[in-house]
Length: 181
Image 1 (cartoon, rainbow, N blue to C red):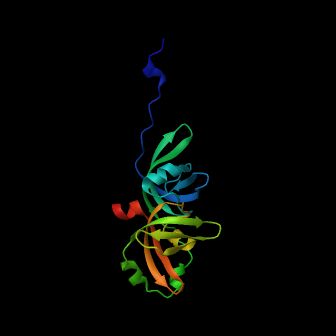
Image 2 (tube, one colour):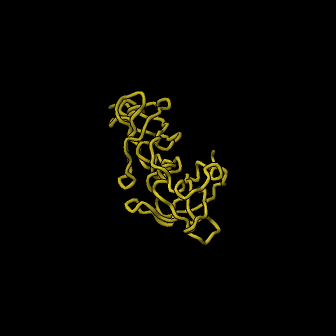
Image 3 (spheres, one colour):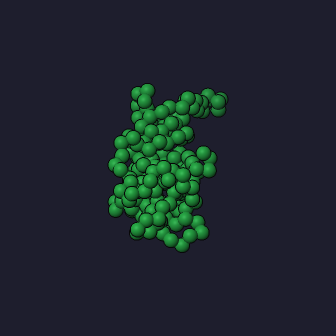
């Protein structure tokens, strides 16, 4: 009879943090891959690990820092430590609206929830807590914030401006990133 300790494999140790770039991430499939700066095989990034960081999606090309564990199926992220928006992005919608970037940067983040977002259409709406007005969310603003998609009911932090056509999200972040930062 075998000793139980002989049949159970020891879990692989969690590696030191790695930095890299999101190769692709599909929130519908629930996973994507990160390419480490140090090279090696792609690292699986599961949506549950990303949710523990406070986001349900991440933009392709975003820089990330993750803790990785080697499994039978390869390298897998077990913790997201940071997310930075992709470096090459189109100009944001708010830049076209003629708003002063320095003034936008001093605006407070406000807590909000996603009402709906359609990635294919490239926009959606959210509501700031305590306000009845819908806030327009454009996909370019999400990408500049390192996000690629949003789910109804998802908690956000937004810097909101009021333009000719109503309320507009100038910057979006996961709520957890703002309260922890």
